[in-house]
Amino acid sequence: MLFESNHQKYSKNDLVAVLKNASICSGNSICVHSELFKLGKILKTKDEFLNDIISALCSCVGADIHKPKSSLGTVIVPTFTYDFCKSGVYDKKTQEAKLGF
Image 1 (cartoon, rainbow, N blue to C red):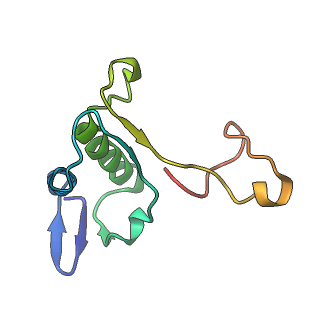
Image 2 (cartoon, rainbow, N blue to C red):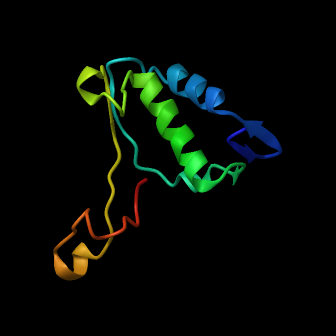
């Protein structure tokens, strides 16, 4: 199980079913900009939860994070800190993201 909300438990397969019901399919490009931890009570570790979310999104659009050139679709997730507001700079190699995966 992935998370619990309103006394109902949801799995990765439930998430995939919802995404497919929303007409997200292989070859699509989707942008995910959300507060995932507000879905409900997370029933896995943070890393396991995020890996399942990424896996569900990728499976719906036909993306493969290990073989991006063979992927059919694209999952876009903005990641950044708000430090760029202060300095105008964000270095993804040295700064931890405060938003996104």
